[in-house]
Image (cartoon, rainbow, N blue to C red; front, side):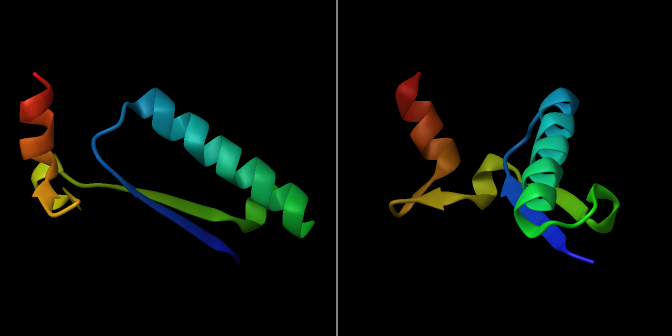
Length: 65
């Protein structure tokens, strides 16, 4: 049973649903396996747990405002 995982910042339930459906559809088509064989998980982490270019994501967001 294939397992697909994604880490992201906070995301709406509608977007998570679309991601799960999309990941499953593409993986099923590419691997030639039934959609029911796939497990998908989306892990949400707060912005202060992400770093980009040596900066915490909350700092980068604050500079945009």
